[in-house]
Image (cartoon, rainbow, N blue to C red):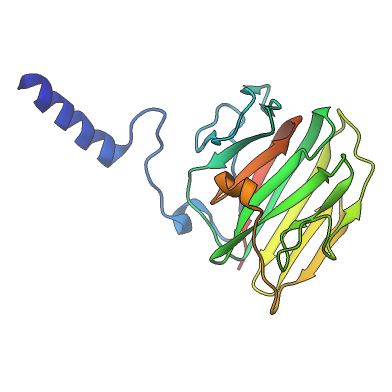
Length: 216
């Protein structure tokens, strides 16, 4: 009986203040200040992230860099913290360290739906949005090609607003999609990344300087 009482008290304390390794719930408007860059990765540990239920490779944090090792197919991390569904920008530095497929599969909310920004897919060069009107990044008008090199950092910026999705690679606009009357969705095989996550395909990658800015 005494052990049961201790367990109940501990559960109540965890639920109220949050226990070590499990951040206490925070309202999104308190977590993301308008116009401020909010770190999604603290450079020290996974904090609000957890391994996605894929055939994952190992995950490690070293020298303020997040390393995601390739798995049997997809590897990924899923965000467990507060969520912004519209009017935001995400930016990060990303690098493919090994492999030949996408090293950025950034899945994010778009209102009540979701989509993925893909960099380096379909043999290592394709970039675009999956999916638009049920067409993958390699098949819709956002598709483009870039000679991504392993062990080279790329700066990525993604903007999500009600009438458009835009993305930049090293400052160059690579996606400028008008979303009015378009169906925005994800591929079923990336569903475990919901509601927000980062994934790779047969590829190891590294990430740093990972931020979200809530727009007015």
